Image (cartoon, rainbow over all chains, first blue to last red; front, side, top):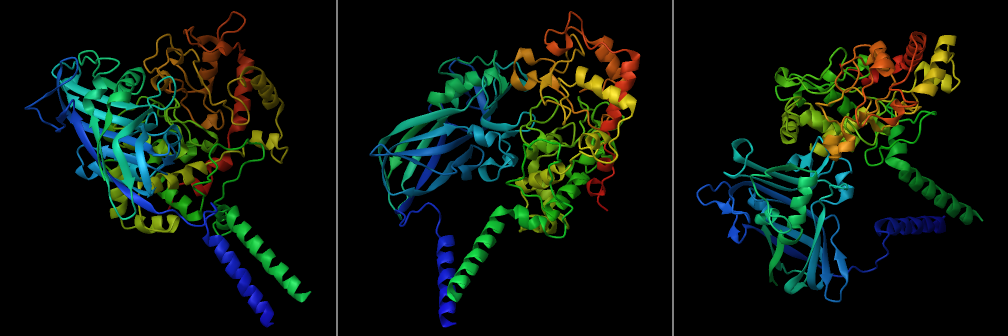
Length: 256
Length: 352
């Protein structure tokens, strides 16, 4: 009887261990650290200030404009290790809203300790999540970055006004999104860091990512606000996405 | 020997126990008393698109979805609920309303479609712009001409209400309310709207009550010959988008508004013909009041739009030639697609 009880206890212990251990089979996890990401919004070198109608910005076409909304998603962040290895940050979706200062400082957590020389990410939201069901967190459709009539995320939302705009109240409406060809606006970004980033457990290094709203209107195609002042997906959104693919983001600082 | 048997027994219990748990939340929850709330794939249906894998149907989840569906709290002025335009007796279409009416007497641009067998649809709305059942109510909730709400307001209204936190707790384990939980509860309700007990279904399954009259049978044969290219059995739609020659110029460009492709102009989703007897008026803009008018359109009203579907321009003619007798037989057959058990199902009607 005693043997039986012992055996029972043994089996339960075994089962408990088996259940407690994740199936990945890693015996010991490497040390992890965190990274603070600071988003700095600008328009062609000037700090972005919302609703500033005193000092207007100028696009590459020379059109004056002011900005009332600037929001964007980045997702699927990959850190590139010094040895060339890629460390994908699981479930990484970040929404930045120029009107919400809390979103300008975000954190990437649980990064394996080590030296990193660059970063890659998706500008927008990957196709899978665009067509998945109701999401939460940064991807909650209540965040106002989701189209209900042609479901999918708005990757970059820019709204403003320009005296050159022919739209009602001189509005500028650039809602860039769409994850299906031929109007797919998912773009990716890769950049080497200006200096090596060190991730160490217990420390909080900082990465500054500059987002230039002016990049929507220059690059491949210079946008003339008298001709293009409204897009919500479709071919015109592709023009804007092709513009910002290279110029929207820049890693400006690494502070270890 | 005894020890061996005991070990074997314990292991067996463990294996059975864990696999039963794996099998689902599905398997487990279905066993609880609310057993009538269970998603079943009808014998004559294909595999559904939405399998409830991430959102298993439970008695309490379904109940919450049902209450939300019938609650005018979801509209700006608290005047209309989903059920205003999706009435159970009309197979969840809007009887006698050509176009949907929203808050402040706002008149929409399209005919509210019926709601059933949604778990088999990969896209929603007349233009297919919505890609997931869970997000399909968002359109009506946020459209300024329908319920005119934003999701944050809906969530905060529900949080502030007396009854909802408890209902969410019962459905999802905690009283937290967010848009995902709202959508998932609603998908449990709308996904459960399965219509598969019409006379036609009974005929197909060779069950009782499935005997076709000679006219119904003649209509069925005509249907297979002339209509089933687009209205494929057993869902009675191939879920494609087609231009059926309603107009030469379309005010509502349809599928083109989603794809931005000119070849999609004037194309709309092929609607299911199940319960078609109950879902008048017909077409995306509700222009035809009766099935007779619909068949007359196919017989003699089809217009030669540049995107007109090839199936409607064969042998040098436009449309589908149908004699008056054939039209009558077809309508007789179409009425075998009416599912009274579905429209009378108490589980789907307004909660008390």
